[in-house]
Length: 568
Image 1 (cartoon, rainbow, N blue to C red):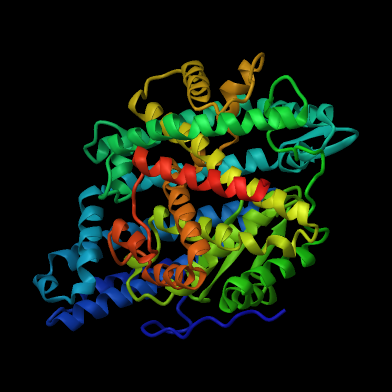
Image 2 (cartoon, rainbow, N blue to C red; image 1 turned 90 degrees about the vertical axis):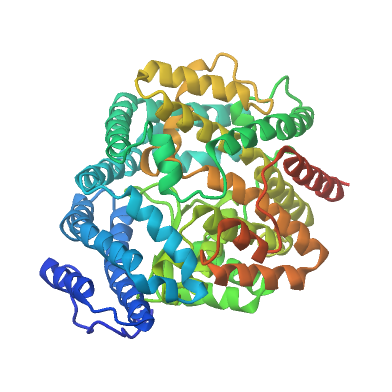
Protein backbone atom coordinates (compact mmCIF):
# COMPACT_ATOMS: atom_id res chain seq x y z
CA UNK A 1 0.00 0.00 0.00
CA UNK A 2 1.51 3.29 -1.11
CA UNK A 3 0.93 6.36 1.02
CA UNK A 4 0.27 9.54 -0.94
CA UNK A 5 2.95 12.18 -0.73
CA UNK A 6 1.84 15.48 0.75
CA UNK A 7 1.70 18.39 -1.64
CA UNK A 8 4.66 20.77 -1.74
CA UNK A 9 4.18 23.70 0.60
CA UNK A 10 4.58 27.14 -0.91
CA UNK A 11 4.93 29.33 2.17
CA UNK A 12 5.87 27.10 5.12
CA UNK A 13 8.84 24.71 5.51
CA UNK A 14 8.36 20.95 5.44
CA UNK A 15 9.50 20.64 9.06
CA UNK A 16 6.85 23.07 10.33
CA UNK A 17 5.18 21.22 13.24
CA UNK A 18 1.43 21.91 13.65
CA UNK A 19 1.41 20.26 17.09
CA UNK A 20 3.92 22.79 18.45
CA UNK A 21 1.90 25.78 19.60
CA UNK A 22 4.97 28.01 19.68
CA UNK A 23 5.58 27.41 15.97
CA UNK A 24 1.91 27.87 15.13
CA UNK A 25 1.63 31.07 17.15
CA UNK A 26 4.80 32.49 15.57
CA UNK A 27 3.37 31.77 12.11
CA UNK A 28 0.06 33.41 12.98
CA UNK A 29 1.76 36.49 14.39
CA UNK A 30 3.87 36.69 11.24
CA UNK A 31 0.73 36.79 9.14
CA UNK A 32 -0.80 39.48 11.32
CA UNK A 33 2.32 41.60 11.13
CA UNK A 34 2.77 41.30 7.36
CA UNK A 35 2.72 44.60 5.48
CA UNK A 36 -0.03 45.21 2.93
CA UNK A 37 1.12 47.75 0.39
CA UNK A 38 -0.72 46.59 -2.71
CA UNK A 39 -3.54 44.19 -3.63
CA UNK A 40 -1.08 41.38 -4.40
CA UNK A 41 0.07 41.52 -0.75
CA UNK A 42 -3.51 40.93 0.38
CA UNK A 43 -3.89 38.03 -2.06
CA UNK A 44 -0.65 36.52 -0.73
CA UNK A 45 -1.90 36.90 2.85
CA UNK A 46 -5.06 34.97 2.00
CA UNK A 47 -3.02 32.23 0.34
CA UNK A 48 -0.57 31.99 3.28
CA UNK A 49 -3.43 31.81 5.78
CA UNK A 50 -5.07 29.12 3.65
CA UNK A 51 -1.89 27.03 3.58
CA UNK A 52 -1.43 27.34 7.35
CA UNK A 53 -5.04 26.35 7.84
CA UNK A 54 -4.52 23.33 5.59
CA UNK A 55 -1.54 22.22 7.69
CA UNK A 56 -3.54 22.46 10.91
CA UNK A 57 -6.62 20.82 9.39
CA UNK A 58 -4.62 17.86 8.11
CA UNK A 59 -3.31 17.19 11.63
CA UNK A 60 -6.83 17.50 13.05
CA UNK A 61 -8.17 15.23 10.31
CA UNK A 62 -5.87 12.33 11.12
CA UNK A 63 -6.58 12.64 14.83
CA UNK A 64 -10.33 12.66 14.17
CA UNK A 65 -10.02 9.66 11.86
CA UNK A 66 -8.03 7.74 14.46
CA UNK A 67 -10.57 8.61 17.15
CA UNK A 68 -13.62 7.48 15.17
CA UNK A 69 -11.90 4.31 14.00
CA UNK A 70 -11.04 3.45 17.61
CA UNK A 71 -13.74 4.78 19.96
CA UNK A 72 -12.90 1.97 22.38
CA UNK A 73 -9.40 3.40 22.89
CA UNK A 74 -9.64 6.62 24.88
CA UNK A 75 -6.10 7.69 24.01
CA UNK A 76 -7.26 8.61 20.50
CA UNK A 77 -10.07 10.83 21.79
CA UNK A 78 -7.63 12.38 24.25
CA UNK A 79 -5.16 13.08 21.43
CA UNK A 80 -7.84 14.74 19.32
CA UNK A 81 -9.21 16.80 22.22
CA UNK A 82 -5.70 17.82 23.25
CA UNK A 83 -4.86 19.12 19.77
CA UNK A 84 -8.21 20.88 19.52
CA UNK A 85 -7.84 22.64 22.87
CA UNK A 86 -4.08 23.31 22.80
CA UNK A 87 -3.74 24.37 19.16
CA UNK A 88 -6.96 24.84 17.17
CA UNK A 89 -8.88 26.65 19.89
CA UNK A 90 -5.89 28.85 20.77
CA UNK A 91 -5.51 29.73 17.09
CA UNK A 92 -9.08 30.98 16.77
CA UNK A 93 -8.47 34.52 18.13
CA UNK A 94 -5.60 34.91 15.66
CA UNK A 95 -7.79 33.64 12.83
CA UNK A 96 -10.34 36.24 13.78
CA UNK A 97 -7.68 38.95 13.73
CA UNK A 98 -6.55 37.73 10.31
CA UNK A 99 -10.08 37.99 8.97
CA UNK A 100 -10.33 41.45 10.50
CA UNK A 101 -7.02 42.47 8.91
CA UNK A 102 -8.30 41.34 5.52
CA UNK A 103 -11.68 43.00 5.89
CA UNK A 104 -10.39 46.30 7.26
CA UNK A 105 -7.68 46.68 4.65
CA UNK A 106 -8.45 49.55 2.25
CA UNK A 107 -6.89 47.36 -0.44
CA UNK A 108 -9.93 45.08 -0.37
CA UNK A 109 -11.75 47.38 -2.79
CA UNK A 110 -8.97 46.72 -5.31
CA UNK A 111 -9.18 42.95 -5.06
CA UNK A 112 -10.30 41.04 -8.17
CA UNK A 113 -13.99 40.18 -8.51
CA UNK A 114 -13.18 36.61 -7.48
CA UNK A 115 -12.53 37.82 -3.93
CA UNK A 116 -15.76 39.77 -3.36
CA UNK A 117 -17.79 36.77 -2.18
CA UNK A 118 -14.98 35.99 0.26
CA UNK A 119 -15.36 39.45 1.79
CA UNK A 120 -19.05 38.78 2.47
CA UNK A 121 -18.19 35.51 4.21
CA UNK A 122 -15.42 37.16 6.23
CA UNK A 123 -17.72 39.99 7.28
CA UNK A 124 -20.28 37.54 8.62
CA UNK A 125 -17.62 35.68 10.58
CA UNK A 126 -16.27 38.90 12.08
CA UNK A 127 -19.68 40.05 13.26
CA UNK A 128 -20.40 36.71 14.97
CA UNK A 129 -17.02 36.01 16.57
CA UNK A 130 -16.87 36.23 20.36
CA UNK A 131 -13.67 35.25 22.16
CA UNK A 132 -15.66 34.18 25.22
CA UNK A 133 -17.28 31.48 23.05
CA UNK A 134 -13.99 29.69 22.43
CA UNK A 135 -13.88 27.74 25.72
CA UNK A 136 -17.59 26.96 25.29
CA UNK A 137 -16.89 25.56 21.83
CA UNK A 138 -14.02 23.46 23.17
CA UNK A 139 -16.30 22.03 25.83
CA UNK A 140 -19.08 21.48 23.29
CA UNK A 141 -16.70 19.58 21.01
CA UNK A 142 -15.55 17.36 23.87
CA UNK A 143 -19.12 16.60 24.92
CA UNK A 144 -20.44 16.00 21.41
CA UNK A 145 -17.67 13.46 20.80
CA UNK A 146 -19.07 11.47 23.70
CA UNK A 147 -22.19 10.64 21.68
CA UNK A 148 -20.24 8.48 19.21
CA UNK A 149 -18.39 6.76 22.03
CA UNK A 150 -21.62 6.03 23.92
CA UNK A 151 -23.65 4.75 20.97
CA UNK A 152 -20.74 3.07 19.19
CA UNK A 153 -20.05 0.91 22.23
CA UNK A 154 -23.66 -0.19 22.85
CA UNK A 155 -24.10 -3.91 22.29
CA UNK A 156 -27.12 -6.14 23.01
CA UNK A 157 -27.72 -9.86 23.18
CA UNK A 158 -29.39 -11.05 19.99
CA UNK A 159 -29.87 -14.74 19.29
CA UNK A 160 -26.92 -15.68 21.46
CA UNK A 161 -24.50 -13.06 20.11
CA UNK A 162 -23.49 -9.54 21.09
CA UNK A 163 -24.48 -7.11 18.35
CA UNK A 164 -23.87 -3.40 17.82
CA UNK A 165 -26.85 -1.21 16.96
CA UNK A 166 -25.43 -0.87 13.45
CA UNK A 167 -25.13 -4.63 13.02
CA UNK A 168 -28.81 -5.05 13.92
CA UNK A 169 -29.87 -2.97 10.92
CA UNK A 170 -29.16 -5.83 8.52
CA UNK A 171 -31.96 -7.85 10.12
CA UNK A 172 -34.54 -5.22 9.13
CA UNK A 173 -34.15 -6.56 5.58
CA UNK A 174 -34.92 -10.15 6.56
CA UNK A 175 -38.14 -11.80 5.23
CA UNK A 176 -38.97 -13.19 8.69
CA UNK A 177 -41.21 -10.51 10.18
CA UNK A 178 -40.74 -11.73 13.74
CA UNK A 179 -36.96 -11.55 13.31
CA UNK A 180 -37.24 -7.99 11.98
CA UNK A 181 -39.40 -6.90 14.88
CA UNK A 182 -37.08 -8.44 17.47
CA UNK A 183 -34.06 -6.72 15.92
CA UNK A 184 -35.93 -3.41 15.74
CA UNK A 185 -36.96 -3.62 19.39
CA UNK A 186 -33.44 -4.65 20.43
CA UNK A 187 -32.10 -1.41 18.94
CA UNK A 188 -34.39 0.54 21.26
CA UNK A 189 -33.44 -1.68 24.17
CA UNK A 190 -29.84 -0.69 23.46
CA UNK A 191 -30.50 3.05 23.15
CA UNK A 192 -32.75 3.02 26.23
CA UNK A 193 -29.93 1.53 28.27
CA UNK A 194 -28.23 4.89 27.76
CA UNK A 195 -31.36 7.06 27.68
CA UNK A 196 -30.71 8.96 30.90
CA UNK A 197 -27.06 9.48 29.96
CA UNK A 198 -27.98 10.74 26.48
CA UNK A 199 -30.63 13.12 27.85
CA UNK A 200 -28.14 14.53 30.31
CA UNK A 201 -25.51 14.87 27.57
CA UNK A 202 -27.93 16.68 25.29
CA UNK A 203 -29.05 19.09 28.03
CA UNK A 204 -25.42 19.98 28.69
CA UNK A 205 -24.85 20.60 24.97
CA UNK A 206 -28.04 22.67 24.71
CA UNK A 207 -26.98 25.00 27.52
CA UNK A 208 -23.52 25.51 26.02
CA UNK A 209 -25.05 26.35 22.66
CA UNK A 210 -27.61 28.76 24.09
CA UNK A 211 -24.87 30.62 25.95
CA UNK A 212 -22.86 31.02 22.74
CA UNK A 213 -25.90 32.57 21.04
CA UNK A 214 -26.45 34.95 23.95
CA UNK A 215 -22.80 35.98 23.88
CA UNK A 216 -23.21 36.88 20.20
CA UNK A 217 -26.30 38.98 20.93
CA UNK A 218 -29.00 36.62 19.64
CA UNK A 219 -32.34 35.87 21.26
CA UNK A 220 -32.06 32.18 20.46
CA UNK A 221 -29.59 29.60 19.21
CA UNK A 222 -31.65 28.84 16.08
CA UNK A 223 -31.23 32.35 14.70
CA UNK A 224 -27.57 32.38 15.69
CA UNK A 225 -26.85 29.14 13.85
CA UNK A 226 -28.80 30.24 10.78
CA UNK A 227 -26.55 33.28 10.57
CA UNK A 228 -23.39 31.39 11.57
CA UNK A 229 -23.95 28.95 8.72
CA UNK A 230 -24.09 31.89 6.31
CA UNK A 231 -27.58 31.12 5.08
CA UNK A 232 -27.86 34.42 3.23
CA UNK A 233 -30.18 33.07 0.52
CA UNK A 234 -33.10 31.84 2.66
CA UNK A 235 -34.70 32.44 6.07
CA UNK A 236 -36.09 30.23 8.87
CA UNK A 237 -39.55 31.15 7.58
CA UNK A 238 -38.61 29.75 4.17
CA UNK A 239 -37.75 26.50 5.91
CA UNK A 240 -41.16 26.39 7.59
CA UNK A 241 -42.64 26.69 4.08
CA UNK A 242 -40.39 23.81 3.02
CA UNK A 243 -41.73 21.74 5.91
CA UNK A 244 -45.29 22.48 4.78
CA UNK A 245 -44.50 21.71 1.13
CA UNK A 246 -43.24 18.26 2.13
CA UNK A 247 -46.24 17.72 4.38
CA UNK A 248 -48.70 18.63 1.59
CA UNK A 249 -46.96 17.21 -1.51
CA UNK A 250 -44.72 14.37 -0.37
CA UNK A 251 -46.72 12.67 2.38
CA UNK A 252 -49.75 11.81 0.15
CA UNK A 253 -47.45 10.23 -2.45
CA UNK A 254 -45.60 8.24 0.19
CA UNK A 255 -48.82 7.04 1.78
CA UNK A 256 -49.67 5.51 -1.61
CA UNK A 257 -46.26 3.80 -1.65
CA UNK A 258 -46.81 2.48 1.88
CA UNK A 259 -50.25 1.17 0.90
CA UNK A 260 -48.63 -0.60 -2.04
CA UNK A 261 -46.06 -2.12 0.32
CA UNK A 262 -48.79 -3.28 2.71
CA UNK A 263 -50.63 -5.13 -0.07
CA UNK A 264 -47.47 -6.76 -1.43
CA UNK A 265 -46.42 -7.92 2.03
CA UNK A 266 -49.94 -9.16 2.77
CA UNK A 267 -50.12 -7.49 6.17
CA UNK A 268 -52.77 -5.42 7.95
CA UNK A 269 -50.53 -2.38 8.41
CA UNK A 270 -46.93 -1.39 7.78
CA UNK A 271 -45.07 -1.26 11.07
CA UNK A 272 -41.67 0.46 11.51
CA UNK A 273 -39.87 -2.87 11.08
CA UNK A 274 -41.63 -3.43 7.74
CA UNK A 275 -40.29 -0.38 5.90
CA UNK A 276 -36.95 -1.77 4.68
CA UNK A 277 -37.69 -5.37 3.78
CA UNK A 278 -37.99 -6.30 0.11
CA UNK A 279 -41.69 -6.70 -0.59
CA UNK A 280 -41.30 -10.15 -2.16
CA UNK A 281 -39.18 -11.43 0.72
CA UNK A 282 -35.88 -11.33 -1.16
CA UNK A 283 -33.00 -9.55 0.55
CA UNK A 284 -30.64 -7.55 -1.64
CA UNK A 285 -27.07 -8.69 -0.99
CA UNK A 286 -24.81 -6.59 -3.20
CA UNK A 287 -21.45 -7.95 -2.04
CA UNK A 288 -19.78 -10.48 0.25
CA UNK A 289 -16.37 -8.97 0.91
CA UNK A 290 -15.03 -5.46 1.33
CA UNK A 291 -12.61 -5.97 -1.57
CA UNK A 292 -15.51 -6.89 -3.85
CA UNK A 293 -17.45 -3.92 -2.51
CA UNK A 294 -14.71 -1.43 -3.41
CA UNK A 295 -13.94 -2.92 -6.83
CA UNK A 296 -17.57 -2.74 -7.91
CA UNK A 297 -17.89 0.85 -6.71
CA UNK A 298 -14.80 1.77 -8.75
CA UNK A 299 -16.28 0.19 -11.90
CA UNK A 300 -19.55 2.07 -11.45
CA UNK A 301 -17.86 5.42 -10.96
CA UNK A 302 -15.75 4.88 -14.09
CA UNK A 303 -18.92 4.40 -16.13
CA UNK A 304 -20.19 7.84 -15.09
CA UNK A 305 -16.78 9.41 -15.70
CA UNK A 306 -13.40 7.60 -15.86
CA UNK A 307 -11.76 10.08 -13.51
CA UNK A 308 -14.25 9.32 -10.74
CA UNK A 309 -13.32 5.64 -10.67
CA UNK A 310 -9.60 6.34 -10.93
CA UNK A 311 -9.78 8.57 -7.88
CA UNK A 312 -11.54 6.00 -5.69
CA UNK A 313 -8.99 3.43 -6.84
CA UNK A 314 -6.21 5.80 -5.79
CA UNK A 315 -7.79 6.12 -2.35
CA UNK A 316 -8.02 2.34 -2.02
CA UNK A 317 -4.38 1.89 -2.95
CA UNK A 318 -3.30 4.67 -0.59
CA UNK A 319 -4.99 3.41 2.57
CA UNK A 320 -7.63 6.13 2.58
CA UNK A 321 -10.65 3.87 3.11
CA UNK A 322 -12.02 2.30 6.33
CA UNK A 323 -15.30 0.77 5.28
CA UNK A 324 -16.38 -2.25 7.35
CA UNK A 325 -18.36 -2.19 10.58
CA UNK A 326 -16.73 -3.50 13.73
CA UNK A 327 -17.07 -3.12 17.49
CA UNK A 328 -15.23 -0.10 18.83
CA UNK A 329 -15.86 1.98 15.73
CA UNK A 330 -18.01 5.13 15.73
CA UNK A 331 -21.37 4.94 13.94
CA UNK A 332 -22.12 6.66 10.64
CA UNK A 333 -19.98 7.57 7.69
CA UNK A 334 -18.03 10.55 6.41
CA UNK A 335 -15.59 11.88 3.84
CA UNK A 336 -12.80 13.84 5.52
CA UNK A 337 -10.65 16.11 3.29
CA UNK A 338 -6.90 15.77 3.80
CA UNK A 339 -5.92 19.18 2.56
CA UNK A 340 -2.16 18.69 2.44
CA UNK A 341 -2.37 15.17 1.08
CA UNK A 342 -4.68 16.47 -1.64
CA UNK A 343 -7.16 13.62 -1.23
CA UNK A 344 -9.88 12.62 1.24
CA UNK A 345 -10.45 9.72 3.65
CA UNK A 346 -13.73 7.75 3.51
CA UNK A 347 -15.09 6.18 6.71
CA UNK A 348 -18.24 4.03 6.91
CA UNK A 349 -19.74 0.93 8.52
CA UNK A 350 -20.50 -1.59 5.77
CA UNK A 351 -22.34 -4.76 6.82
CA UNK A 352 -23.25 -6.18 3.41
CA UNK A 353 -26.62 -4.53 2.75
CA UNK A 354 -27.95 -2.32 0.00
CA UNK A 355 -27.62 0.81 2.13
CA UNK A 356 -23.87 0.33 1.97
CA UNK A 357 -23.96 0.82 -1.81
CA UNK A 358 -25.65 4.18 -1.33
CA UNK A 359 -23.18 5.17 1.36
CA UNK A 360 -19.99 4.41 -0.61
CA UNK A 361 -21.32 6.27 -3.67
CA UNK A 362 -22.59 9.14 -1.50
CA UNK A 363 -19.21 9.54 0.17
CA UNK A 364 -17.53 9.18 -3.24
CA UNK A 365 -19.47 12.27 -4.33
CA UNK A 366 -17.97 14.14 -1.40
CA UNK A 367 -14.57 12.70 -2.32
CA UNK A 368 -14.78 13.96 -5.92
CA UNK A 369 -15.70 17.37 -4.51
CA UNK A 370 -12.56 17.28 -2.37
CA UNK A 371 -10.36 16.38 -5.33
CA UNK A 372 -11.81 19.24 -7.40
CA UNK A 373 -11.55 21.94 -4.71
CA UNK A 374 -8.52 21.02 -2.61
CA UNK A 375 -6.28 23.31 -4.66
CA UNK A 376 -8.49 26.39 -4.35
CA UNK A 377 -6.11 28.91 -2.69
CA UNK A 378 -8.93 30.61 -0.76
CA UNK A 379 -10.08 28.45 2.15
CA UNK A 380 -13.43 30.26 2.29
CA UNK A 381 -14.25 28.89 -1.16
CA UNK A 382 -13.86 25.24 -0.26
CA UNK A 383 -17.31 23.55 -0.34
CA UNK A 384 -18.03 24.23 3.32
CA UNK A 385 -21.71 25.08 2.77
CA UNK A 386 -23.49 21.81 3.37
CA UNK A 387 -26.20 22.55 0.81
CA UNK A 388 -23.34 22.45 -1.68
CA UNK A 389 -21.42 19.52 -0.22
CA UNK A 390 -24.52 17.32 0.05
CA UNK A 391 -25.64 18.15 -3.48
CA UNK A 392 -22.33 16.66 -4.65
CA UNK A 393 -22.81 13.45 -2.67
CA UNK A 394 -26.54 12.88 -3.17
CA UNK A 395 -26.21 13.57 -6.89
CA UNK A 396 -23.48 10.95 -7.18
CA UNK A 397 -25.87 8.34 -5.78
CA UNK A 398 -28.32 9.10 -8.57
CA UNK A 399 -25.80 9.67 -11.38
CA UNK A 400 -24.52 6.14 -10.75
CA UNK A 401 -27.96 4.58 -10.32
CA UNK A 402 -28.34 3.17 -13.82
CA UNK A 403 -25.00 1.36 -13.41
CA UNK A 404 -25.81 -0.43 -10.15
CA UNK A 405 -26.13 -3.68 -12.09
CA UNK A 406 -22.44 -4.12 -11.19
CA UNK A 407 -23.73 -4.92 -7.72
CA UNK A 408 -26.98 -6.54 -8.85
CA UNK A 409 -26.46 -8.92 -11.76
CA UNK A 410 -29.99 -10.29 -11.48
CA UNK A 411 -32.36 -7.97 -13.38
CA UNK A 412 -35.05 -8.16 -10.69
CA UNK A 413 -32.52 -7.28 -8.00
CA UNK A 414 -31.35 -4.36 -10.13
CA UNK A 415 -34.91 -3.07 -10.44
CA UNK A 416 -35.42 -3.47 -6.70
CA UNK A 417 -32.26 -1.47 -5.97
CA UNK A 418 -33.37 1.37 -8.26
CA UNK A 419 -36.84 1.43 -6.73
CA UNK A 420 -35.32 1.43 -3.26
CA UNK A 421 -32.98 4.32 -4.09
CA UNK A 422 -35.71 6.50 -5.61
CA UNK A 423 -38.16 5.69 -2.85
CA UNK A 424 -35.56 6.39 -0.18
CA UNK A 425 -34.73 9.74 -1.78
CA UNK A 426 -38.34 10.84 -1.30
CA UNK A 427 -39.01 8.96 1.94
CA UNK A 428 -36.05 10.82 3.42
CA UNK A 429 -37.74 14.20 3.06
CA UNK A 430 -40.34 13.78 5.86
CA UNK A 431 -37.61 12.56 8.21
CA UNK A 432 -35.43 15.52 7.25
CA UNK A 433 -38.29 17.91 8.03
CA UNK A 434 -38.88 16.13 11.36
CA UNK A 435 -35.26 16.55 12.46
CA UNK A 436 -35.13 20.17 11.30
CA UNK A 437 -38.47 21.16 12.84
CA UNK A 438 -37.43 19.43 16.08
CA UNK A 439 -34.31 21.56 16.36
CA UNK A 440 -36.23 24.75 15.55
CA UNK A 441 -38.53 23.93 18.47
CA UNK A 442 -35.76 22.85 20.87
CA UNK A 443 -33.79 26.07 20.55
CA UNK A 444 -36.72 28.49 20.40
CA UNK A 445 -38.22 26.78 23.47
CA UNK A 446 -35.02 26.38 25.47
CA UNK A 447 -36.58 25.83 28.90
CA UNK A 448 -38.33 22.59 27.94
CA UNK A 449 -37.95 19.40 29.97
CA UNK A 450 -36.75 16.05 28.57
CA UNK A 451 -40.36 14.85 28.77
CA UNK A 452 -41.64 17.83 26.77
CA UNK A 453 -38.84 17.27 24.26
CA UNK A 454 -39.90 13.67 23.74
CA UNK A 455 -43.57 14.66 23.46
CA UNK A 456 -42.86 17.28 20.81
CA UNK A 457 -40.82 14.82 18.83
CA UNK A 458 -43.74 12.36 18.96
CA UNK A 459 -46.00 15.12 17.58
CA UNK A 460 -43.58 15.70 14.68
CA UNK A 461 -43.45 11.97 14.01
CA UNK A 462 -47.23 12.08 13.57
CA UNK A 463 -47.18 15.24 11.45
CA UNK A 464 -44.64 13.87 8.99
CA UNK A 465 -45.74 10.24 9.12
CA UNK A 466 -45.93 8.79 5.59
CA UNK A 467 -48.42 6.11 6.65
CA UNK A 468 -46.38 3.85 8.93
CA UNK A 469 -48.29 2.32 11.87
CA UNK A 470 -46.68 3.30 15.18
CA UNK A 471 -49.60 2.23 17.38
CA UNK A 472 -48.58 0.96 20.85
CA UNK A 473 -45.05 2.22 20.22
CA UNK A 474 -45.32 5.57 21.99
CA UNK A 475 -42.07 5.21 23.93
CA UNK A 476 -40.17 4.25 20.79
CA UNK A 477 -41.72 7.08 18.79
CA UNK A 478 -40.71 9.63 21.44
CA UNK A 479 -37.10 8.50 21.60
CA UNK A 480 -36.43 7.91 17.90
CA UNK A 481 -34.44 11.17 17.87
CA UNK A 482 -31.72 9.66 20.05
CA UNK A 483 -30.44 7.63 17.08
CA UNK A 484 -29.79 10.84 15.10
CA UNK A 485 -26.17 11.82 15.68
CA UNK A 486 -26.60 15.21 13.96
CA UNK A 487 -28.85 16.45 16.77
CA UNK A 488 -26.06 15.80 19.26
CA UNK A 489 -22.92 16.46 17.25
CA UNK A 490 -23.70 19.02 14.53
CA UNK A 491 -26.84 21.02 15.39
CA UNK A 492 -28.88 22.38 12.48
CA UNK A 493 -26.76 20.45 9.99
CA UNK A 494 -29.63 18.45 8.45
CA UNK A 495 -32.01 20.57 6.41
CA UNK A 496 -29.14 20.87 3.94
CA UNK A 497 -29.75 17.21 3.08
CA UNK A 498 -33.35 17.98 2.15
CA UNK A 499 -32.44 20.97 0.00
CA UNK A 500 -29.69 18.96 -1.65
CA UNK A 501 -31.95 15.95 -2.18
CA UNK A 502 -34.33 18.02 -4.27
CA UNK A 503 -31.38 19.33 -6.25
CA UNK A 504 -29.94 15.85 -6.73
CA UNK A 505 -33.22 14.56 -8.13
CA UNK A 506 -33.28 17.53 -10.51
CA UNK A 507 -29.75 16.65 -11.65
CA UNK A 508 -30.79 13.03 -12.16
CA UNK A 509 -33.72 14.22 -14.28
CA UNK A 510 -31.25 16.15 -16.45
CA UNK A 511 -28.94 13.11 -16.59
CA UNK A 512 -31.72 10.94 -18.01
CA UNK A 513 -32.39 13.58 -20.66
CA UNK A 514 -28.74 14.35 -21.57
CA UNK A 515 -26.09 12.31 -19.66
CA UNK A 516 -23.03 14.01 -21.15
CA UNK A 517 -24.19 17.56 -20.47
CA UNK A 518 -25.44 16.69 -16.97
CA UNK A 519 -22.07 15.20 -15.97
CA UNK A 520 -20.19 18.17 -17.48
CA UNK A 521 -22.34 20.57 -15.47
CA UNK A 522 -21.92 18.42 -12.36
CA UNK A 523 -18.11 18.59 -12.65
CA UNK A 524 -18.30 22.34 -13.23
CA UNK A 525 -20.40 22.59 -10.08
CA UNK A 526 -17.81 20.54 -8.14
CA UNK A 527 -15.01 22.87 -9.25
CA UNK A 528 -16.96 25.95 -8.18
CA UNK A 529 -16.92 25.03 -4.49
CA UNK A 530 -18.40 27.94 -2.57
CA UNK A 531 -16.84 30.68 -4.68
CA UNK A 532 -20.32 32.00 -5.53
CA UNK A 533 -23.56 32.49 -3.57
CA UNK A 534 -25.51 29.30 -3.03
CA UNK A 535 -28.16 29.91 -5.70
CA UNK A 536 -25.44 30.67 -8.28
CA UNK A 537 -23.59 27.49 -7.37
CA UNK A 538 -26.76 25.49 -8.00
CA UNK A 539 -27.07 27.19 -11.38
CA UNK A 540 -23.60 25.84 -12.24
CA UNK A 541 -25.07 22.37 -11.78
CA UNK A 542 -27.84 23.26 -14.24
CA UNK A 543 -30.58 23.44 -11.59
CA UNK A 544 -32.15 26.03 -9.30
CA UNK A 545 -32.25 26.55 -5.54
CA UNK A 546 -35.93 26.15 -4.81
CA UNK A 547 -37.97 24.38 -2.14
CA UNK A 548 -41.37 25.88 -2.86
CA UNK A 549 -44.49 23.74 -2.93
CA UNK A 550 -44.65 23.85 -6.74
CA UNK A 551 -41.03 22.71 -7.05
CA UNK A 552 -41.49 19.91 -4.53
CA UNK A 553 -44.57 18.77 -6.46
CA UNK A 554 -42.63 18.68 -9.73
CA UNK A 555 -39.92 16.50 -8.16
CA UNK A 556 -42.48 14.12 -6.69
CA UNK A 557 -44.18 13.79 -10.08
CA UNK A 558 -40.82 13.02 -11.73
CA UNK A 559 -40.00 10.29 -9.22
CA UNK A 560 -43.49 8.87 -9.49
CA UNK A 561 -43.14 8.59 -13.27
CA UNK A 562 -39.71 6.93 -13.01
CA UNK A 563 -41.05 4.38 -10.55
CA UNK A 564 -43.91 3.58 -12.92
CA UNK A 565 -41.40 2.94 -15.71
CA UNK A 566 -39.33 0.59 -13.57
CA UNK A 567 -42.28 -1.27 -12.08
CA UNK A 568 -44.07 -1.61 -15.40
